[in-house]
Length: 409
Image (cartoon, rainbow, N blue to C red):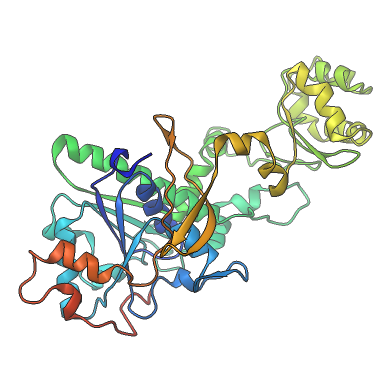
């Protein structure tokens, strides 16, 4: 989709955030057409630039930074320096959105909390992510993904009964909080278009993780406070009965979802020994481990392809378990056109994934990679502040410095 046709074309976002959660929110806005300007510490930048999740370095930055900050611009500013502070205030007058994810109180002490920014620009939509909210005994604790997973109950809920607490294989708290913030910002922008007012949009890693569990927590809150019991055999969901789970086959693994008829499933699979459960509507939950143990023994006798050939034509919900190379070799991967090539300075090329949305049958791809630190400072200050600051343009007035006031997070 051409930039001029994207829904947020013309929207300006000042992104004071770092690491993963809030930068993910601004990535979503950038893909939708917004102009996202990262505000980074001189000489250091977003600490995510040096947070390596592998030994892959691309043009001086790690692959994670490239993934989460593509399609953005970068300026540097020292929040302790009066000239830089003045320029940021002037930029905020031109902005539609500001985003930050420091620990509660940090950005306020620098003079860029919501109340201060609203005085500068009453129409601003101000997005904020914390670890655990802005009040209470946890507010100053590190807002880190694994810690939020641990405190939210997700680790305790995941896995089979005898497994230790089991984290997800992704930074799921960061991802969910970032997506939640993007949703809230978009809603506030729509609201501003209706009534003309800006808004403060807040979420936290903990709130995102609790919302992630809203389905099962609602059951718990209305079920006499009973705790779920994880299945002992191939557990994939503590609240779902047999056959729900992942089973080993003769050559790999097979995922089997819920089924309306245990009898139909058993007959298709040629499984004896389950008939005593057919007439008990609660058996698939109350006797799930016994049922799944019988199924597991039978499923090991055939290959995954053989089971798919039997079960899928009968509309039994099941799937092979793919690794990434197998997924990327699939027809679905190719048809959805999920990859894109992005470039830095027109020379450095790397592969990336596009955002998940399609609008008017168009994907939201862009070939612009994550910016080098401060790469757009001079151009942005000259372009956006030439009429808003006295004297010299912002590009000439403030040299880069080696330290800033972004250190607490």
